[in-house]
Length: 202
Image (cartoon, rainbow, N blue to C red):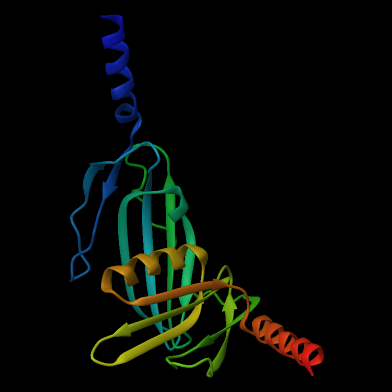
């Protein structure tokens, strides 16, 4: 009897420790009905997200969501293709229904250069514009989609946004790559390798 009670207690423990969070997924009109949900496991937190889409420096669209989220999704992340940028901010908390308030809206697009650079635009080659990455955009991203014709987007992305884009690209069957580093650094490394090769084999 004691063993049975212990097993049942251990089985129920994770459920007892899961959070109840507010959920709000906007429909096509941008509105949603707020409900309460129980998170899938102990590892989740309650999150409130504001996602802002920018085009040519102007705010194109704002999407606000509430849900259970994993800790790795908390904070600010972004992707920048030059003329088009998405900035997402997720505010997380660790007690029941604590995600009632959305992150404070940002008045400006993050514009603090971080010293990294990537190719940008929709070129299919490595030639194109050089984009200066901002804030935590430490990765160069490339997405290629086949929709009757091949379309490629290149730019800068944060680590968390790389994970999100990889999942989305896989769902739609697009080719995706995200690599850490600066395009300028990579170019210099290639030049050095070429010079060393010429010196060794000439």
